[in-house]
Length: 416
Image (tube, rainbow, N blue to C red; front, side, top):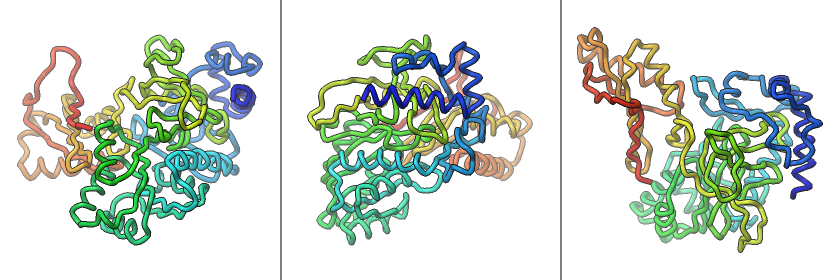
């Protein structure tokens, strides 16, 4: 593995130097060239890439191949309303689907299985990734996308789905719907591959009991490929990183020092096979631990723990990356107060988002109908940027609690 990583890293650095001027300039700025990178031991010499770099180079500034060689994009929201766009060549997609296939096999999947993919399709990576991975395994694939629960249950029962792929919150909603419909004896599921949201071991135990399955975690992010960067095996003690394609590091987010295995810090990934969007040392902002222990499943791939938090203010709501700054931009455009709060909750297994913001004294004199109309308009604008709905509550001036220290912008009431 080390030899493979060494060769691929050296090749990828040369590829980026030759084809991505933005990154070449970052290397020149710190005084290094591809000749300085001879193995993974030199990885720490390379500059980091952040979401700010992706924002500043939108849309084509980090493209590593001619546009004619790309065949697809996937996308997530960006920090200022601009979307993060990741490009793929045909080979990039093949590699991504291989990674997802490994996740399905690790969950016990074979060509005899029926895989129901209830992640969203389209720009979101969840659906396309697991759909392609299921094809690679040779399983019958049900490309259901998210929602339409009645149809989900019909196909799950009629086609005897054995592996369910979706967010954990939707899996819990499906489990309740199955029970309410009296379909428990018709469900043949044996495994679930759940990701895109934070979920606890307690939630895992509930899902396993309700659905009669083993529930496996999967990790990915749009910038690097999507789900399949890492995945759980039968041991369920962390996610194996597909390190023949992604080299992980853990750093101290304040000092940027590389930390040893076993220490908690920010997760950084270097993509050593992806050519269209070749990110080196990408700071995910996710906090976790890396460990290289023997695993009973026989895999020797390094493991990453479940995520322990973020080193920035990003929230994940219904599988969508949300930054308070995105919402603040909308509020400022409407001339609203800078005193606002985001209240997140999980009701009936679905994340909810409420944006509470103070009206100015002038706006407060509006009629009730006028305020309601403004709330609806702002809500629609937020949905255009985030891709998810939010309830907007315009409240009276000075009615929100002031803080003497750092303003409390986010109240997350979710109990996962």
